[in-house]
Length: 262
Image (tube, rainbow, N blue to C red; front, side):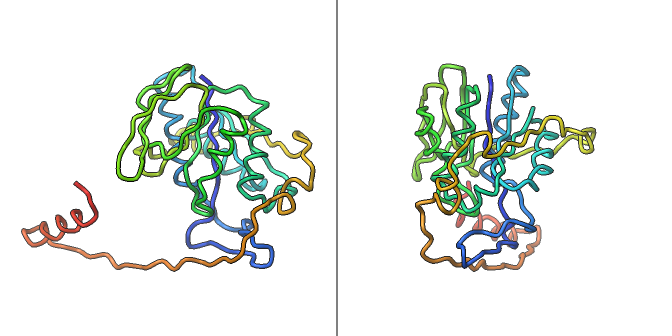
């Protein structure tokens, strides 16, 4: 089975910088991390590879050339290869154009399953998975929290539908967008692989490989127009320590009950 995992690297929450004149996030020189939902999707792919060595996992990312090192790190964690789609023409692309660029690459690849995250920290539109599914004319589903069964013909999945968990059966090939609320937490690289040279497993492609019109990509080609932006204020809370006694246990119990845990 061939799995393509779409990932995005996003600015760390404390490092968000914005270009208010162009209405785009500033990504150059900003510390980035793999998007949490995408990390869950990749871990799912790696777990499938653990169970079946014949599974091939390719990581695909769109972004600046500086992301090569980040992708090599994901290869060291267990992916077979990675592809970086990078071109200055693509800077400022909205989700609609991004989906078209990614689809242009995916149409050149053979795959049984595409995995992505449901949401991103720097946009949170949830558009990419559904748009790519539509462009490729394949089954797609978002907010997936678990994959129970998977074959080349069918996927049986659990989906978070706000107030309930649904069990769905989808025909393959399919695109599944995984939620950060899933239990797939991305592993670390093995100590023996931390310094491994994996550069030969990374490929970089640009617009010469797709020949998209400059007027159809980037800010020029993006129909989404940002009217107003703001940086959300995040409340900082101090840690509270409790004693290991009846009073402390009651505080922890009430806190978890308030959060709906248990």
